[in-house]
Image (cartoon, rainbow, N blue to C red; front, side):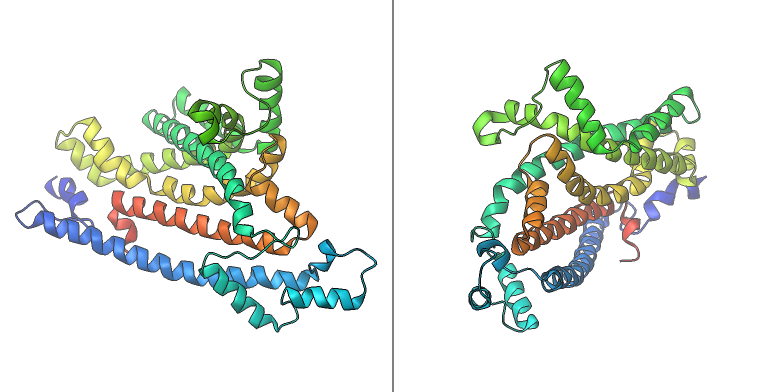
Length: 348
């Protein structure tokens, strides 16, 4: 019984309580976090180099140039060559890539072929819209996904558990654009509770108007996140409660609250956090269709419009920002996971 009860404190990153316990535990957490950050930086650098190279290579494979946007169909070959020389497109591919990549490292995403404006400036306001929608959708997904998962795990095989499982299964197969259209038809057109389109910046309308315009698109995006987090949370908690360290804690007479937060949740939340790390890219990708339904001039709509126009630097800028956001978000999720369960970083 004693061995079972002490199992949780023998995990990597923790020590038994003694005079030197606090410094050692803090040092272990710092060392684990440092290894994780170093590992993530290496992965980020590798992925970033590969992704940016492929992204830039698409420019040459597309056969597009500024002449498609800035010159008429009657343009002469000399005019096209002069314009491409002005943009530096007549240089060797590797030289163009290194120049573009060096600009990215300095925060310069290049200029748009469509209007000559800096891509970074064009993306600032649009990224704020998309991050607002995706961020609120993520919060909704976390609150309801984790809540439903905990409820289902608390009463396994019960009617409540089966109802939650059925509900999450249904919403997981509903495309965000279908949900968005239904939400507009019901809550905007029929009931008039929310606006059907548009966006009010936080600094102009305050928190109230800002949220009022975000609720419907955020809810439409959140369904898949809710479903996956609830399922993974349920599975993780049920499995955690079957482990010996929880049995030992129960036999020691620890309160149900302490067992849940200190033992079951910290060890059972891993699958849900792993899924959460993969949801942010999905939310950014789903914003393309959702923004079109709700009339939001955000990140996704800008990318789609730029691709339709053949504005290659603008599309490249969108992809670079998306790569950075996804990697940073996954780093945050991994740090939270290691903080809750140091054993998850054992192989780092």
